[in-house]
Image (tube, rainbow over all chains, first blue to last red; front, side, top):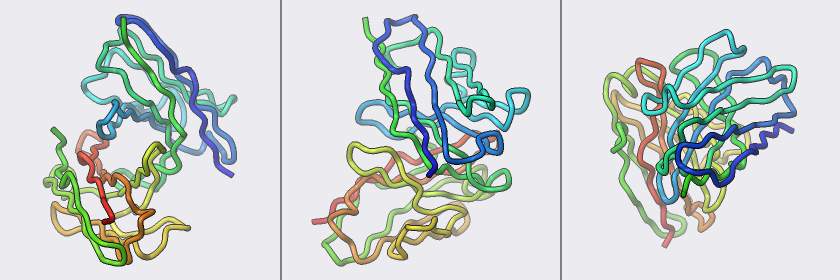
Length: 123
Length: 109
Protein backbone atom coordinates (compact mmCIF):
# COMPACT_ATOMS: atom_id res chain seq x y z
CA UNK A 1 0.00 0.00 0.00
CA UNK A 2 1.03 3.60 -0.47
CA UNK A 3 2.98 4.96 2.49
CA UNK A 4 4.59 8.30 3.28
CA UNK A 5 6.70 8.57 6.41
CA UNK A 6 8.16 11.88 7.54
CA UNK A 7 11.20 12.21 9.76
CA UNK A 8 13.74 14.77 10.85
CA UNK A 9 11.62 16.94 13.09
CA UNK A 10 12.78 18.08 16.49
CA UNK A 11 13.72 21.02 18.65
CA UNK A 12 15.86 23.73 17.08
CA UNK A 13 16.85 27.21 18.17
CA UNK A 14 15.71 30.31 16.30
CA UNK A 15 18.03 30.91 13.36
CA UNK A 16 18.87 27.25 13.11
CA UNK A 17 18.33 24.76 10.31
CA UNK A 18 16.61 21.43 9.93
CA UNK A 19 16.13 18.99 7.07
CA UNK A 20 12.94 16.99 6.89
CA UNK A 21 12.64 13.76 4.94
CA UNK A 22 9.63 11.93 3.56
CA UNK A 23 10.25 8.30 2.69
CA UNK A 24 7.73 6.81 0.31
CA UNK A 25 6.76 3.32 -0.77
CA UNK A 26 4.00 1.50 -2.62
CA UNK A 27 4.01 3.64 -5.76
CA UNK A 28 6.33 4.84 -8.51
CA UNK A 29 7.69 7.93 -6.79
CA UNK A 30 9.19 9.46 -9.93
CA UNK A 31 5.76 9.56 -11.57
CA UNK A 32 4.29 11.95 -9.04
CA UNK A 33 4.51 15.57 -8.00
CA UNK A 34 4.91 15.96 -4.22
CA UNK A 35 4.25 18.62 -1.61
CA UNK A 36 4.90 19.75 1.95
CA UNK A 37 2.33 21.24 4.28
CA UNK A 38 2.40 22.40 7.87
CA UNK A 39 0.02 22.97 10.74
CA UNK A 40 0.93 25.19 13.67
CA UNK A 41 -0.40 24.07 17.08
CA UNK A 42 -4.15 24.63 17.21
CA UNK A 43 -4.18 26.25 13.76
CA UNK A 44 -5.25 25.32 10.24
CA UNK A 45 -3.43 23.71 7.36
CA UNK A 46 -0.90 25.65 5.32
CA UNK A 47 0.66 24.65 2.03
CA UNK A 48 4.45 25.05 2.13
CA UNK A 49 5.92 23.91 -1.17
CA UNK A 50 5.46 21.67 -4.21
CA UNK A 51 7.85 19.96 -6.60
CA UNK A 52 7.25 18.32 -9.90
CA UNK A 53 8.70 15.01 -11.00
CA UNK A 54 12.38 16.00 -10.99
CA UNK A 55 14.43 18.66 -9.27
CA UNK A 56 15.14 20.37 -12.56
CA UNK A 57 11.49 21.03 -13.03
CA UNK A 58 9.07 23.32 -11.36
CA UNK A 59 9.15 24.07 -7.67
CA UNK A 60 6.91 26.48 -5.86
CA UNK A 61 6.78 27.96 -2.37
CA UNK A 62 4.40 29.85 -0.17
CA UNK A 63 5.36 33.51 -0.48
CA UNK A 64 6.12 33.84 3.24
CA UNK A 65 8.65 31.00 3.08
CA UNK A 66 10.40 31.63 -0.20
CA UNK A 67 14.13 31.99 0.30
CA UNK A 68 14.30 30.14 3.62
CA UNK A 69 12.90 26.74 2.66
CA UNK A 70 14.04 24.50 -0.19
CA UNK A 71 12.17 21.48 -1.47
CA UNK A 72 13.99 18.68 -3.25
CA UNK A 73 13.59 15.04 -4.13
CA UNK A 74 15.73 12.00 -4.85
CA UNK A 75 13.90 9.70 -7.21
CA UNK A 76 16.55 6.99 -6.71
CA UNK A 77 15.69 6.92 -2.99
CA UNK A 78 11.95 7.49 -3.37
CA UNK A 79 12.30 10.39 -0.97
CA UNK A 80 11.21 13.99 -0.63
CA UNK A 81 13.05 16.59 1.41
CA UNK A 82 12.52 20.02 2.93
CA UNK A 83 15.56 22.04 3.93
CA UNK A 84 14.52 24.72 6.41
CA UNK A 85 16.96 27.53 7.21
CA UNK A 86 16.78 30.64 9.38
CA UNK A 87 14.02 29.05 11.38
CA UNK A 88 11.69 31.26 13.39
CA UNK A 89 9.45 30.58 16.37
CA UNK A 90 6.46 30.88 14.06
CA UNK A 91 7.73 27.95 11.98
CA UNK A 92 6.80 25.66 14.87
CA UNK A 93 4.34 23.17 13.40
CA UNK A 94 3.66 19.61 12.38
CA UNK A 95 4.99 19.18 8.86
CA UNK A 96 3.27 16.78 6.49
CA UNK A 97 4.27 15.46 3.10
CA UNK A 98 1.63 14.46 0.57
CA UNK A 99 1.38 13.09 -2.93
CA UNK A 100 -0.32 14.95 -5.74
CA UNK A 101 -3.34 13.51 -7.48
CA UNK A 102 -4.96 14.68 -10.70
CA UNK A 103 -3.76 15.24 -14.22
CA UNK A 104 -3.69 18.96 -14.82
CA UNK A 105 -3.16 22.36 -13.28
CA UNK A 106 -6.07 23.58 -11.23
CA UNK A 107 -7.36 20.05 -10.73
CA UNK A 108 -4.66 18.69 -8.46
CA UNK A 109 -5.46 17.37 -5.02
CA UNK A 110 -3.41 15.68 -2.28
CA UNK A 111 -3.65 12.05 -1.31
CA UNK A 112 -2.34 10.37 0.72
CA UNK A 113 -0.65 12.31 3.52
CA UNK A 114 2.07 11.19 5.86
CA UNK A 115 1.58 11.12 9.62
CA UNK A 116 3.61 14.28 10.12
CA UNK A 117 6.74 15.29 12.00
CA UNK A 118 6.84 17.99 14.68
CA UNK A 119 9.25 20.88 14.35
CA UNK A 120 9.65 23.07 17.43
CA UNK A 121 11.61 26.30 17.15
CA UNK A 122 12.42 27.64 20.58
CA UNK A 123 15.32 29.03 22.54
CA UNK B 1 -6.78 35.27 7.69
CA UNK B 2 -7.47 32.64 5.02
CA UNK B 3 -8.28 33.61 1.44
CA UNK B 4 -10.97 30.93 1.43
CA UNK B 5 -13.71 31.51 4.01
CA UNK B 6 -15.27 28.67 5.98
CA UNK B 7 -17.52 28.83 9.04
CA UNK B 8 -15.44 28.12 12.15
CA UNK B 9 -17.88 25.53 13.39
CA UNK B 10 -21.04 23.64 12.54
CA UNK B 11 -23.05 21.17 14.54
CA UNK B 12 -25.94 18.77 14.10
CA UNK B 13 -27.45 15.72 15.71
CA UNK B 14 -26.59 12.15 14.76
CA UNK B 15 -28.42 11.08 11.62
CA UNK B 16 -28.94 14.63 10.46
CA UNK B 17 -27.37 16.48 7.55
CA UNK B 18 -24.85 19.33 7.64
CA UNK B 19 -23.27 21.52 5.00
CA UNK B 20 -19.96 23.36 5.16
CA UNK B 21 -19.42 26.30 2.87
CA UNK B 22 -16.18 27.54 1.33
CA UNK B 23 -16.19 30.98 -0.25
CA UNK B 24 -13.46 32.30 -2.51
CA UNK B 25 -13.06 34.45 -5.59
CA UNK B 26 -12.61 34.28 -9.34
CA UNK B 27 -8.84 34.02 -8.87
CA UNK B 28 -9.09 30.78 -6.93
CA UNK B 29 -12.32 28.75 -6.66
CA UNK B 30 -13.87 30.47 -9.66
CA UNK B 31 -11.23 29.12 -12.03
CA UNK B 32 -9.99 25.95 -10.33
CA UNK B 33 -11.24 22.74 -8.82
CA UNK B 34 -11.91 22.31 -5.11
CA UNK B 35 -10.86 19.45 -2.86
CA UNK B 36 -11.96 18.75 0.71
CA UNK B 37 -9.99 17.20 3.56
CA UNK B 38 -11.07 15.64 6.83
CA UNK B 39 -8.79 15.79 9.85
CA UNK B 40 -9.84 13.63 12.74
CA UNK B 41 -8.42 14.66 16.13
CA UNK B 42 -4.71 13.95 16.37
CA UNK B 43 -4.39 12.54 12.87
CA UNK B 44 -3.18 13.60 9.44
CA UNK B 45 -5.58 15.11 6.90
CA UNK B 46 -7.44 12.74 4.62
CA UNK B 47 -8.85 13.46 1.17
CA UNK B 48 -12.66 13.42 1.12
CA UNK B 49 -13.60 15.03 -2.17
CA UNK B 50 -11.58 15.98 -5.25
CA UNK B 51 -12.35 17.83 -8.47
CA UNK B 52 -15.32 19.54 -6.77
CA UNK B 53 -17.56 16.52 -6.42
CA UNK B 54 -15.69 13.22 -6.79
CA UNK B 55 -15.07 10.83 -3.93
CA UNK B 56 -11.93 8.68 -3.57
CA UNK B 57 -12.53 4.97 -3.21
CA UNK B 58 -13.49 4.12 0.34
CA UNK B 59 -15.21 7.42 1.07
CA UNK B 60 -18.91 6.76 1.71
CA UNK B 61 -21.54 8.50 -0.38
CA UNK B 62 -22.71 10.29 2.77
CA UNK B 63 -20.04 12.82 1.82
CA UNK B 64 -20.66 15.00 -1.23
CA UNK B 65 -19.13 18.09 -2.78
CA UNK B 66 -20.42 20.77 -5.08
CA UNK B 67 -19.22 24.03 -6.55
CA UNK B 68 -21.03 27.02 -7.95
CA UNK B 69 -19.20 30.09 -9.15
CA UNK B 70 -16.75 31.17 -6.47
CA UNK B 71 -18.13 28.97 -3.70
CA UNK B 72 -18.04 25.30 -2.83
CA UNK B 73 -19.97 23.18 -0.38
CA UNK B 74 -19.31 19.94 1.45
CA UNK B 75 -22.38 18.00 2.50
CA UNK B 76 -22.49 15.22 5.04
CA UNK B 77 -25.65 13.18 5.56
CA UNK B 78 -26.48 10.55 8.15
CA UNK B 79 -24.11 12.15 10.64
CA UNK B 80 -22.18 9.83 12.92
CA UNK B 81 -20.15 10.62 16.02
CA UNK B 82 -17.11 9.40 14.10
CA UNK B 83 -17.54 12.31 11.68
CA UNK B 84 -16.47 14.78 14.37
CA UNK B 85 -13.41 16.38 12.85
CA UNK B 86 -12.01 19.50 11.25
CA UNK B 87 -12.86 19.93 7.58
CA UNK B 88 -10.82 21.99 5.13
CA UNK B 89 -11.53 23.11 1.61
CA UNK B 90 -8.64 23.75 -0.76
CA UNK B 91 -7.97 25.06 -4.22
CA UNK B 92 -5.33 26.73 -6.35
CA UNK B 93 -4.68 30.35 -7.16
CA UNK B 94 -3.37 31.82 -10.39
CA UNK B 95 0.24 31.48 -9.19
CA UNK B 96 -0.22 27.76 -8.49
CA UNK B 97 -0.15 28.28 -4.76
CA UNK B 98 -2.47 25.91 -2.93
CA UNK B 99 -4.94 27.65 -0.63
CA UNK B 100 -6.85 26.23 2.33
CA UNK B 101 -9.89 27.54 4.05
CA UNK B 102 -9.52 28.24 7.73
CA UNK B 103 -11.18 24.96 8.62
CA UNK B 104 -14.55 24.05 10.09
CA UNK B 105 -14.96 22.07 13.28
CA UNK B 106 -17.89 19.66 13.05
CA UNK B 107 -19.59 18.67 16.28
CA UNK B 108 -22.11 15.85 16.27
CA UNK B 109 -24.33 16.61 19.24
